[in-house]
Image (cartoon, rainbow, N blue to C red; front, side, top):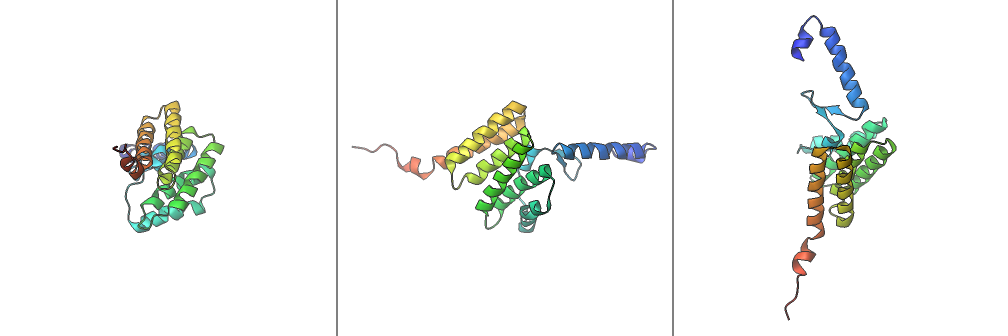
Length: 178
């Protein structure tokens, strides 16, 4: 990319890059600082950040009007809200469900699977069975679109939901001795 931009064809390269980024944005992909694409599935995995960055990510959906970008921002917000010092679980679940509805309206299978995974993760503390259902549906949808990284994330969400579903009650409610 650097070579292309420094050559005589820099105008053409810049146009091609702008076109590629616009197309990626149109189909729901964003870019990292190093210009590598981030897909909707990557949005549900937020790297640990400081509290100010998490708060900014949580508030980001408020100013977004375009449905695909808003849905992506809602998934990011939901994941950020769970990582905050005072987790905002109800807001996170509400954002994940709103993202799911938007991705479904947009007929974006990858986005829907990503939002389902976010619904699963945000439901863990309150509804382990619902979390498991969302994670299983996420896996099914990621399989249908052939998204292996998404499938791995969904399998992880299934494991988390099973762990939550079988927490203390399963450990302490084993068979009793006569």
